[in-house]
Length: 78
Image (cartoon, rainbow, N blue to C red; front, side, top):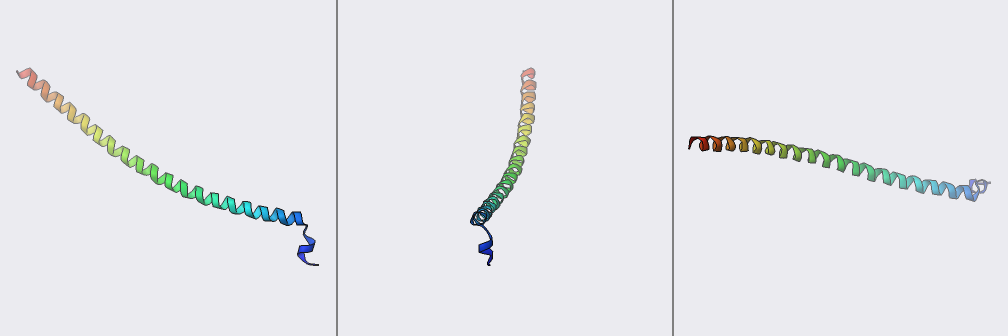
């Protein structure tokens, strides 16, 4: 007797379905890993851009303070 005759048809179909499911899970894992890497890169890039904006903001606040001080001093001297 061969193995085909010993294994019931339902068991063979079940094994085929498990293999298909395993392939789909593997593909989803690869997609998820790819997306996770993209998200990580995107978050790091976002952090860098936010830090640059914050630096510019504090520079603008400092410049505004200096301008306000100069205007106040010029106004008082008049």
